[in-house]
Length: 150
Image 1 (cartoon, rainbow, N blue to C red):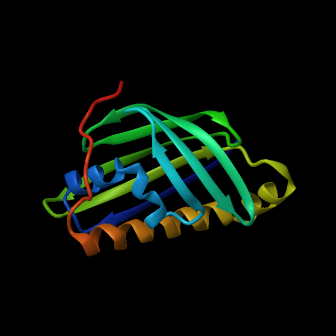
Image 2: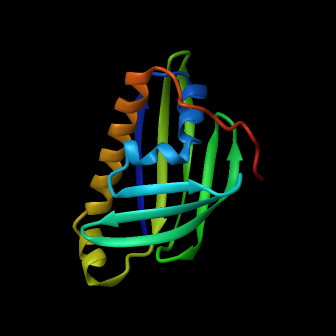
């Protein structure tokens, strides 16, 4: 398994950053390689991704969700193996640190080489930068889910 950790400071309150992150269907607006996410239940999402011409579909289950603090997930079926957590840290009334930790299993030669060359780390950093731009430009979340999953 490979691991990536990245973080970014965003110029919005913690509840705004958290609420936006719970809107999984908006991820294609700022995550490269994510074609579509369907929210199937409060805790189950279906992902369709395309990275370097490789299309994958998988289901991910939210394993822990605490408003304004964290969202954790793991894949439960499909063509990808990963788990991760995003944590939200209040810096002040209008700034939040968003930290992403991802653990994944590269499949095949192309993904293994890409991982060794730092592709996933760079993509994660770029995705967080696009999230920052997306949420700061809007200033408001597109929605939010405040439920708790433990």
